[in-house]
Amino acid sequence: MENNLKKNLMTQMLDHVPDLGWTWDALYRAVKTTKKAKSSNKEELQTIFDNKISNIIGTFNDKLDEDMHVIFNTENNKDLGTTDTIKALILSRLKASANYKSVIKTSLFFMAQPRNAYDAFNQLMKTSNRIWEIAGDTSSGGTFYSKRLILSGVYSSTLVHWLAKKNRSIGESEGFLDRRLEDVKNFGKLSKQSIEVFEKTKRDLGSIVTKNKR
Image (cartoon, helix red, strand yellow):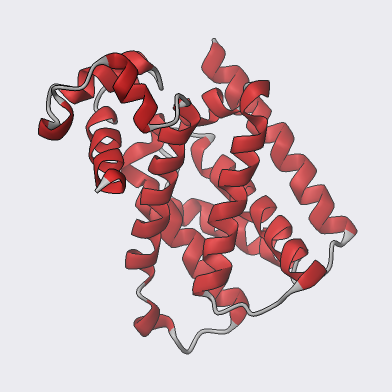
């Protein structure tokens, strides 16, 4: 029940994020169209998300992960190899995000603040882990973590490429994704190329955040 309320509030809040940003004011505005929370005061509303805006963004990211899985359709892609499955899932994640470009940019700006670094990393790794789970990964130990770290760099760099231009299509970013996957084709190993991809992604994310500040 609580998870459904969180999802409902977050969904209603998305209409107000472009104008108000990821703020409590945007949440209070969303309450007006969410029946079960109309009687809640501001303190009670914040408590629903453990008094952290980053948790609302986490709920938004969870929604995009769920939508990614639906769009991917495991049954239709069961014969794909590992790399092609990962590629299809990343493209599905972008498709799930297609109507929320400005909201995602606002999310990146908010999560780039130092106090949100831990939550930002966890959310990125959660998406990476979800992709590997859908792809059927059964690795463990160091390989488990290195796969997810490498994939987080591939996914986030592709996201940055797609967001960099307002009208850039997902198709235009597919070639970029192909090159990133080629760079890190040995997913279980933290190669020099995969580390370079991860570092470049951090710089590109910083560039998008800087543009949002202006």
